[in-house]
Image (cartoon, rainbow, N blue to C red; front, side, top):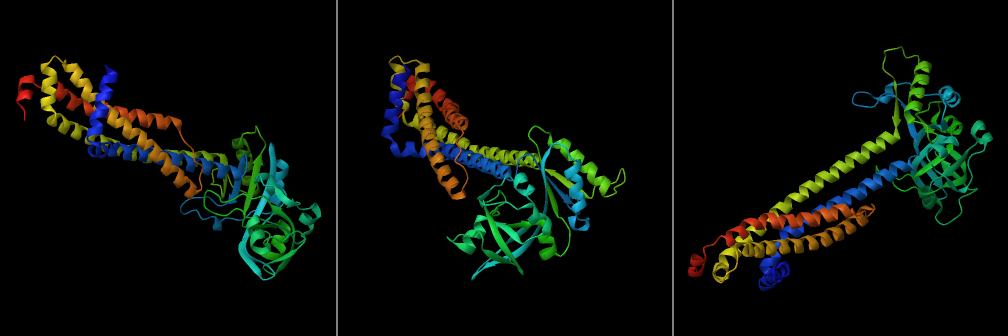
Length: 401
């Protein structure tokens, strides 16, 4: 019975190919939009999560001032070397504490130049950032203590200044300082904020302070907790140490901020997931429009085939058989639209993810749900026309011209 109903439905669809195509177009657009939006959104979420993970594992970022409207960090006192020493000696359960000071400069080698960011830090920077030196080496202890002009460059700076030449042992000029290149960092690529993480020069903090900054200020401290250690505990210890060192009275607000990158990653991933769900819901509205189109065409089809329905009823067809015939026809139309929409949506998502440079992450569950929903649309919106056809009076139907 079901097979026969499907065969009749396919014959009807083939008799009116253009009308059938226009009928299922709404379903195609709806399903395609849902699949494309969700797939692109999932890829974006995966990229943001991966980019934040590149910033370091179990990472805490400490900086002067409170973040937020009206809380400018420039009004707060910068950290100093004694603050860093206190954190290194008093914090438990941490892998590394890395002071960070930065400045925008122009790096020059021969006739080539590059506007970039120079960062002053120590070898703890590589641990907190999960960053390895691809070629060359890290800083020696005497370079960190003595302030020798040695530097490690990112791949973007290397490519711009040296091209295919070997940079190790060469001297570049950063501002008015001649600096020997002792290493090249591994490539990290763009961050989730669109900045090139490889466009940087790293040198010992003391060298940076003496020869470039002209002060001993430290603008940020990166703290990496050991695996298995709760970052919330480390955060509480950092706040306690800094409140003591900065003489903040009980009940007074901190004049510094401690950011847990894990919490930021979770919040960002949650936000992108919510936006993905919202975009999918908006795209799903077009499925309803497609369902209305199916109901409209099926009502027209019932009117056109009134005489045919009357003949079937007159020769003994049951109401439920006529009902199932039109219901199956609407469902088959909708399922065709669902299949085409899935293929179209995945194709569009693949092209979009390649252009946006995000992972092509297919959610099998949403594909199945979109297909099932397209079938449901056919059943729901095809039921009223099918019921109307089944309840026709055979005598009146036979008189219809």
